[in-house]
Image (cartoon, rainbow, N blue to C red; front, side, top):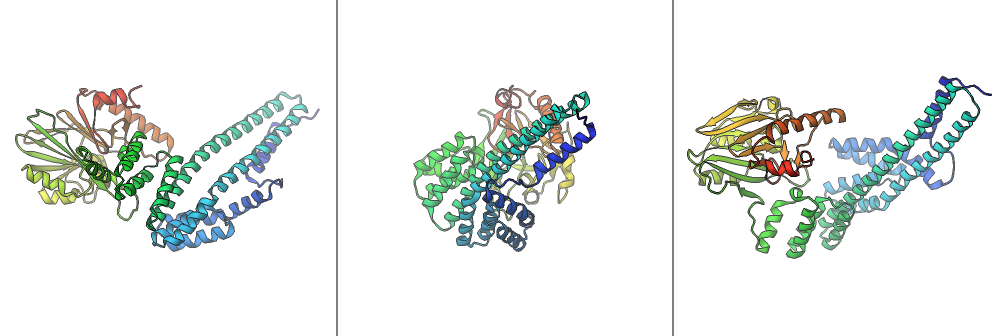
Length: 483
């Protein structure tokens, strides 16, 4: 019998696994895929360089890299897509269209290429199992048998991980193809080929029913064509997909006006409770866009809260300068006392300086977010503080998670939750790794349970984005808390 040293066995298995996973297969079963794999490997550094240049705004450098990439692999769909984007930015729509057609023509091939690579790995996995079985049958050493068992386990794990990655890649490819169709529709739209662009947008949402931007563009085209009923059908379909807050709300308001529907609550909403004698609350939905970006607007909620008696008021999270805010304050003869921020992100703070100067008031911001402000806030807020503006009492609640300093403001029966708590959701967590993200999320959930969900069920939750809700509704329906 052959006796195999355990260390030697693992070295052998490691070498075999290395060649299985990283060296191009030697079998020549499919010459076209074999050649494409070589092209893909040789073009990867150029593609990666192009993406890096693109993200840094170096258009020429990106263009040169992507062109070289395509020279090495003519069917590189991803490089074609980026070139289409570069031409689109330069408003060379015919060239953009040509590269998008190439991208769409080859995106399925890229998926097939990935599947081919997985198949080759599976073949090698099976071959390796055969080798290990021979080793197993050739030894009666317990130590060697255990080592071979561990090698089998490693192969099973590697193959299982590969299968999971393949399924995730398939889903990702479907979303990518949907986005390619959407972008193709955008190019066609710029060429005023409206019916063709509609077709591409509809293909995009068939592949990805969550593609809000495709819905927005379909609704816009139908609205401009005065096909209001058709536009409404797509709007309702998008809302049924849970995309309410990702839709173009200005377009929705215009569509409702054209159909003779009430528009209250879309872009502004009076949240003052009926019969209320002390507190008034107005929500303005603001259209925030990052400068230079072509992405759709992010709608952010700015609130004006005021005392019905003293007329003292505060502005919470003015992310965008909007004439409706000043008009409302002048018309109601309100005396603004301060600008309050729930956290430091630009979509909540973008118009701080404008309104602070306009009304000659301080900016009050979270203590632990202050380092991100420019200019610095006038007053730093901490957990447990109570602000008193001529009887308008504001309780400050620290809820770190979305940002280190995130705050909520409790004013009578209203909790202004910023990006801490939304209707049926919580704020997004950013951290350096998945483990840290999970830790921060768990702490945030615990904080919300201890500090926010203990409020009376009737308390109205006024989030930084989206529609208002109540504490009772979130305890019953929010998936993070209702289980």
